Amino acid sequence: MAKFSFTPRGVCSAQIDFEIENGIVHNVQFTRGCSGNTQGVAKLCEGRAATELIELLKGTDCNMRGTSCPDQLARALELGLEEIQNAK
Image 1: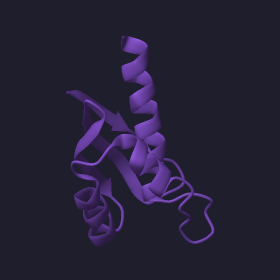
Image 2: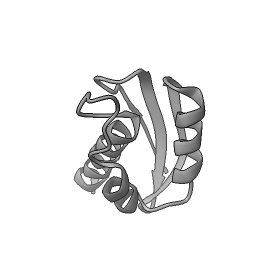
Image 3: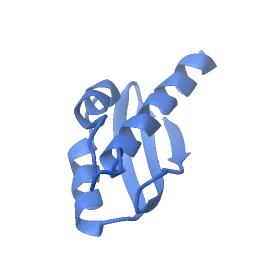
Image 4: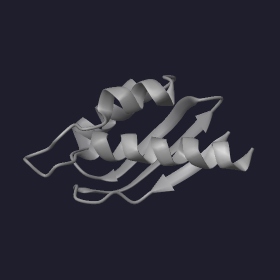
């Protein structure tokens, strides 16, 4: 299982931590941000394919910022998958 920490930009959350095992996402945790929303996103992500989550979450906008916590998670997952691929 690969563990990742990502520093999001342009959103209220300060850090996103997650794990990927065989392409499946586990243990998503947001530091700061809108607590109820980030907890809900984290729960919905548990046990789902990273590629599916990227497709669902990428491009989600919050208050005309051009990004959001879910969008930043999608970007983090892309980087995580890329890192896993490069390690092979």
